[in-house]
Image 1 (tube, protein in one colour):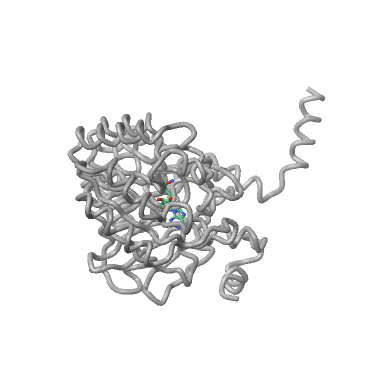
Image 2: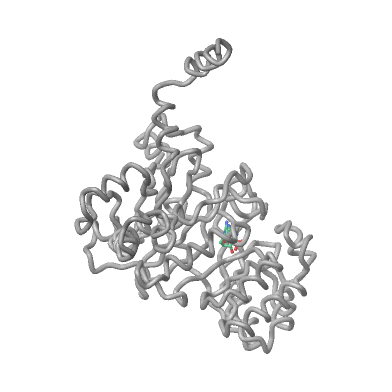
Length: 389
Ligand code: SAH
């Protein structure tokens, strides 16, 4: 008995009041991460329609507080408050570019700091979300992996990026403004966080939630071949974008470590399987890097390999990342590359860079923040100043 008391005393001394609060919070469950069937299981004494109502409040009406769920009885609201929390980020930074692009730096606590970008185009609003904190893939031109991989995001943390951006958009420009497209092209490799990303896609396209058409969702991968096969069998209608960035294995290995694991031949086979199973045309991404992958000959090599396939090519002028020491290909090379691919019957788009004045390339904002040593304790305004200076 004495020894138990002693241990208790020691533990008690170590646990501050704040930690007590945090531990208490941690015992609550993340309700935004739950399908309505999962919510129903958590509330066995409630009528079944309640879980749908709660799901709609969370995922359609985008409330962030149980008190706002005005058609629920007080006792249920109390129960929800006692046992669940609604995942929502703290905004560490929010930058608006001259071209209307908005970039958010979100903090979900426990070191989960990620970027989200909202873009405007003739087709409406597109959002680019992150799927991991950091990245394991190590592509040399990309800022996301610098500092390594830290964590997978939960489905709710990916959803909460969209929901916050949607609320922000409505508050700025009015209720009628809706995000109509989503790309998983922020920080992280989505297929390396497979289960959470799949659940996120299903919840975002759920008719009781945002009901975003799966056809308006694009998942971008550096080419995890086994996962592409798995994704093809999921029965989803999303577009698969593959980051190719090279016409052959040797060139690809220079900038993308994944090329040492999967050959381009095996990647193209997986891509064909995805197309056959889903009927969705593959989109290829190709960052144009001076002297690495931008020559006429390389365009011909690529054209020969892909000719006859129903694919779409996105040529992306490299967004300079300080650490990478790589240069954007000259505009003339980008135009020439596009023309050559077109001669092989391939549809090509040259993507315009958006939000370069606010560090909108993958992982750059988070990176800038880490570099400056700015952290939560030093506050939001401090981070803003550093980024602007
Ligand atoms: N991990 C996924 C998605 C994240 S990046 C993937 O590799 O596809 C989204 C796209 O932006 C990828 O095609 C990626 O290669 C590209 N990208 C990353 N850094 C870039 C940069 N500095 N300039 C241009 N494109 C970049």
